[in-house]
Image (cartoon, rainbow, N blue to C red; front, side, top):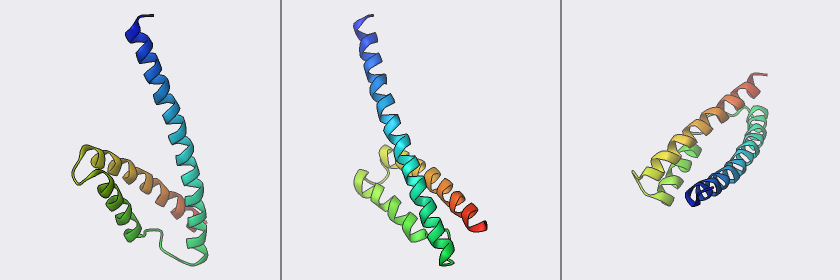
Length: 95
């Protein structure tokens, strides 16, 4: 194996390790989202908490700056995460 191939292999191994951590954290987050949904159902609260969502986007901006590539990237990811979280909670509340 050539030196660059070994380096590429090692870097991809690092990415795989990071991906495994991300996946685990996302599943943990989904479990907490379910608990939040149960609490919202019990207390007849709305699924959407716009202040909470706005605070998440603001936190991303505070960490990475406004209009940076990192902020755009993370905001898109969190948009999808929150969309799926709301779907999960809406399904919980319906049943």
